[in-house]
Length: 210
Image (cartoon, rainbow, N blue to C red):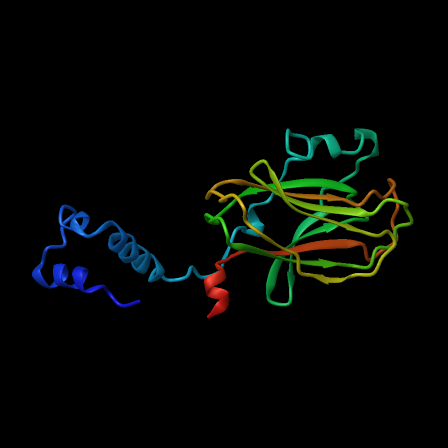
């Protein structure tokens, strides 16, 4: 956007102080401000998470407390949740044969402004559990559930690419919760049952257009 002449003359004369700018006609002042805002560079994609920082908060207060199975119906063995490389990328893996319910938490590494898109990537092995209830996966940031998915048991596996548009800005340091509930019975081991959260990243729509 070209700089209007009135503003250009201020620049040429060196009259660019805070006192000088409001002397522009109100409409022209707004146009100049919008032009300057439009020149702000798009934000590069950025990850909200570091897989080394997840912690188990299943036994603490969290947004999914009311959806937790009864304590006697829960199991999550010590080595059921691990970091795992998928190709060259890190992920957090939940072995569903050894863990039928867990809530993990960490804190957002970046601010995500309103209007940005958050991209997710999940790898889900084929589910071999025989239960009438689907496997539930969910992401809550702050006190707002941002995404939920339900996958049939038994069901096929593969990559999933959920995304959501941020309607309320996510502050840097906001708590992020990753909720997994397979609804599998205790001791139900059928092999090949796991889910990996690979990506949770911020994407500026202006960057996507470039």
